[in-house]
Image (cartoon, helix red, strand yellow):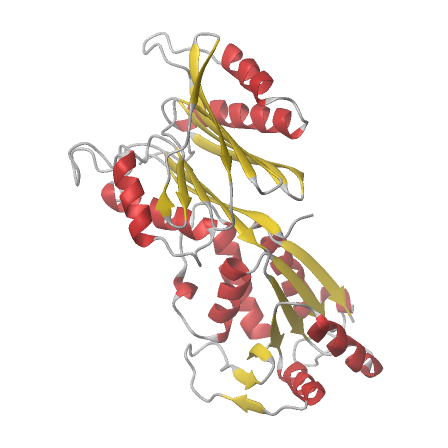
Amino acid sequence: MNNLCTDVGYLSINKYGEQLCGDTVDIACQNENSLVLVLADGLGSGVKASILSTLTSKIISTMLANNMTIEDCVTTVVSTLPVCEKRGIAYSTFTIIHVVDNKTAEVIQYDNPHVIYLHNGRNYEYDKINLTIGDKSIYKSKIELSPGDVLVAMSDGAIYAGVGNALNFGWQRTNIIEFLEAVYDDSYSAKMLSSILIDQCSQLYDNIPGDDTTFATIKIRKRKPINLMIGPPSNSNDVNKMMTLFFAKDGKHIVCGGTTSYLAAQYLGKEIHTELDYVDPEIPPISKIEGVELATEGVITINRVLSYAKNYVDDSNCNTQWKLQKDGASLIANLLFEESTDINFYVGKAINPAHQNPELPINFSIKMRLIDELADCLIKMGKRVNVSYF
């Protein structure tokens, strides 16, 4: 296993008036360091387009994940795709990005706008080999990747944004590249980049999209662990063990809960300095402990983080209000969603009378439920998550 990971984030907006999106993104992981992303765009919009793009993306990703060659996968799909009698074009186009060992990307493109490749925040054009499979023209590329490199795939709804409204000829690929280079920040995750792009498309469409539009972004990152501890252990004799394991882990450390913060400060031999200002009136102020990146209140704060996490994994929701806020929940969200790749939870199972229903076992406590749901959301974001109970 290398010290790199592939960060993936995608977002779509539906054609105005449609409940289903005609674009589909499917991701299949081959192992810890290799994955297949397929973005398929069904002809037209609505139910038919959604079904065809779903079938196309699922067939390709499943075949590739089972070690079939890209040529075989493309031949199978292209040979079986129906062609619209009126328009003479395939009912579904697609883009395939096959990342191998987090170091190489094999890109296959059929009738979608070509993938954008950013290196050090600047666009780089890559070689494309034109293949004819059946009677269809396929472009194949191989790109050597470095940490920080970004690949952006899109459906054609992106390049049509603004036609006849904000722009005469739409948001062409060159315009998208210029926009990306202007807004790019190395700290942005793949999901954040997709969110910025899809939001710009929505604005160009004047919030009335004329076509289904999707951006799928891949970013190669060095692994960054974040460690979060919440609650004291059920057995007070295990405090030293829990603290030792927690602070021995590489990466940044977040401590949640008043009692937990007190125990952490005591273990480190440091003082707690609690801020008095409520940045958000509903979220208790943060504290400062030397040796800890962030110390916050427990259940109320984590409950807000969970709310942000559920919105973040919802493909139709681009709300990132926490990005610029400085309350405890927003700071945790930034660390977990944007900065981290690996997250280690250290969860104390001591019963807090303020949060515990005495008729329910500890597994059903509020704290346990919050951590379980948050961990599930983080896994859906593509994070590597480990939860340890004490």
